[in-house]
Image (cartoon, rainbow, N blue to C red):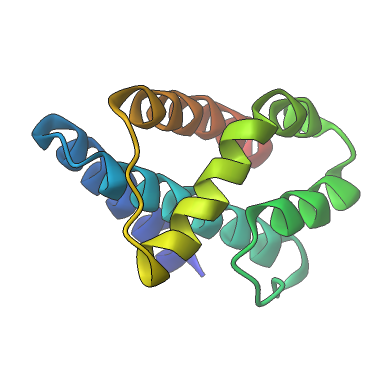
Length: 125
């Protein structure tokens, strides 16, 4: 399911594009999609399937159960839980209400995406 990982990278590219234009709500949505698809791709590579959920928290918990704290995955989640929950909200809110996120929110999301990418590289090595 390499298409999940490829699509995730496209969402991250879109997040950067949105940031440059000041579309912070879209940054949040696209970073959430990036992380969600990367998590699903990792789960699929490990067990051949992934939970059919959009909740990042649940996906992190599933992966952490399988990998313990390999590459500090659980540490990453705990350290960034607040922003991860904000990203979950951004995903839901993008469909049902007009969310407004700040430049600071968007910067934090992009920083977490970069850090998460490093964790993923470690997990795949």
